[in-house]
Amino acid sequence: MAAFSLDHATMSYSVSPIGFVRSCFKEKFAIPRQPQLAPAARGVLELLAPFDTGEAVQGLEQVSHVWLLFLFHQALEERPRLKVRPPRLGGNKSVGVFASRATHRPNGIGQSVVTLDKVEPGRLWLSGIDLLDGTPVLDIKPYVPYADSVQGACNRIAEAAPPLIAVRWLDEALGQARRHGLRLDEPLVELIEQCLAQDPRPAYQNPPPERRYGARFWDVDVRWHYPEPGTICVLEVVAA
Ligand code: SAM
Image (cartoon, rainbow, N blue to C red; front, side):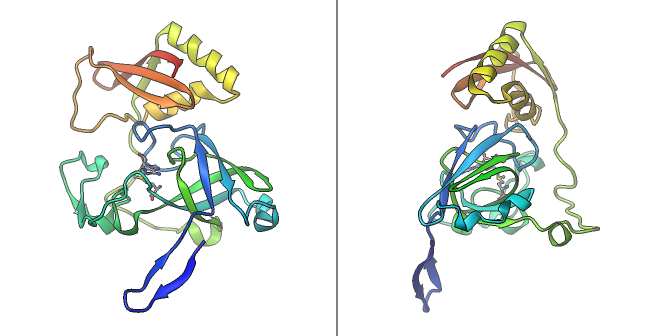
């Protein structure tokens, strides 16, 4: 909630979270770079008092998607950056911070349009998220299709979703993922495939097959490698 202490000299204004996201993503690595790229990425937004009684979300059950405004709480920096190197430009070309959706930005504010699966008093069930576990949410706004979907819009830096790469599984790893998915009651196989197909590795890395990568989804650690360029193979899915 906003603290009503607008400082007219600096226009500084303090805000505080209306809730926190409990997310499938326990670390930044391997989170898709935008929402909706991994529909199986689920989470719950737990609202704080006084928004947790049901009144504040009344009517939201009529809405399929919401905008979340949130704090990049694990990327906050003292000094704002003016130029950033977006991963989609290969990490070696820079653009102005306002031409990108980079996490390091003035005021540290992120925005994501996410699917609203269920509304309960004090709790919103979400999917298609790109948010780290524990992300503080500053505001929620309903998606308004006629206003938010702009005909003829273009962005020549990010024209289309990033290309996907092939994801294969070792048989044992697929069995492990299915078992953990059943235990968690979550679409874990889909989550892993959708996130790894985005190719989380930094663009400049061209790893040899023996190099292992890993990330945590829910309470499991997923490990994979690149047996050949353009292909990921999931090696194991084990309890964290
Ligand atoms: N859709 C948002 C936007 O445009 O403002 C986020 C885009 S940002 C490029 C997406 C990345 O933010 C994710 O891949 C993840 O690594 C990172 N991220 C997500 N939640 C975060 C948090 N709470 N703190 C820091 N980084 C976070």
